[in-house]
Length: 187
Image 1 (cartoon, rainbow, N blue to C red):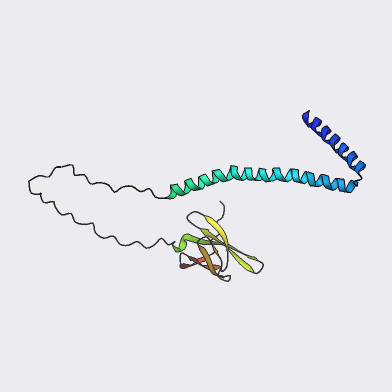
Image 2: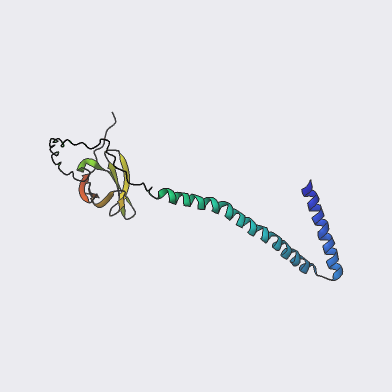
């Protein structure tokens, strides 16, 4: 109800202002310009204050979270452990400890590289002047379309021979030649 009363009071004030302006000889255009400037001043200040308020409302928690995140990323510094000898020194000479042979050296393992059968050529399509190959990773059946000369994930398609339905791909720096996978018939 107060909104209606406020609107009626505003209209009444505008009519009184308009009547006073006409009596003073002010044109309706000048009166409208004065109203526009007054409303603009009245609306600009709350907008600026509201923006600053929102900035404070969001800036303070964000600054706190960033600071907390930076503190949590720093490694915790611990004092060096102190060696405690639980046995008091004795006057007896130390007993000899039998020698333990070190374990035999293990051969170094080659970096994990996919075997040749780890990828299959699932299909080929031409889009415009670009040839796309469907490459399937056999162990998890993940497939992706890769353009010749492009890389998707760890697979780069080096070339494609349409006459043999074979592609040369590069995975982890090694090149493999893969052929079109045999079609599986539904039983």
